[in-house]
Length: 105
Image (cartoon, rainbow, N blue to C red):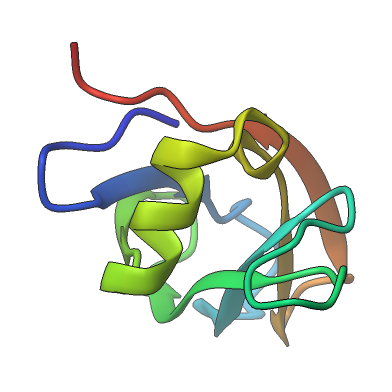
């Protein structure tokens, strides 16, 4: 996942066209894979959260906006650039996907 100078990136989501089930909707959460040290204690950090809705049989880009603290952590700590995106919602099984966050050059 590439992000711009303000910490805004995106992820492409597709919803399979199934027999009359309808749109896929839910939440996506981006967390660090490893425990990192944001403020004195090592823990997994939530970098971004977003809601999404994708019509059946369509592909849509979901905007993930990292907070200022999360973007600063990603810039300073290479371990925080390894993240896992978790998708939960209607018409979906829970999906987890590992990502690498690419910073602007």
